[in-house]
Picture 1 (cartoon, rainbow, N blue to C red):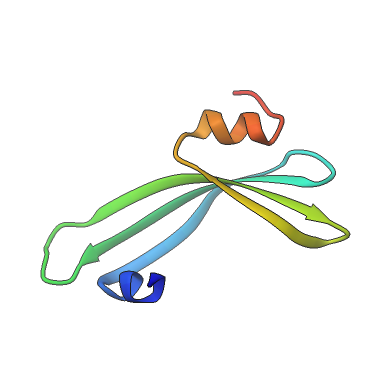
Picture 2: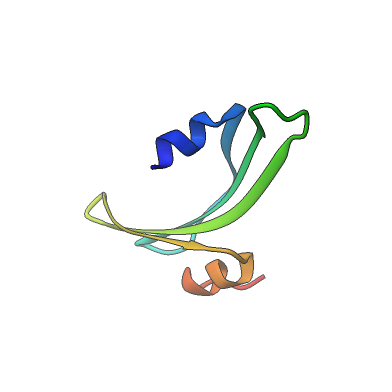
Length: 79
């Protein structure tokens, strides 16, 4: 699963590079993931964008997008 995949990297990090309070119930988050696959000298990275929906202070939905513009639109934002 996900744990085995993460553990296959050395120096694996996941960092929020941008957080926008989009509305009363939505938060936009840009994510950067970096790491070096075991046995490799090359660092790889991936980016994705997340929109989290909250109700009453509880996280009720998480949507992941491959493109920033898609996530911004889902959060009710524009570039």
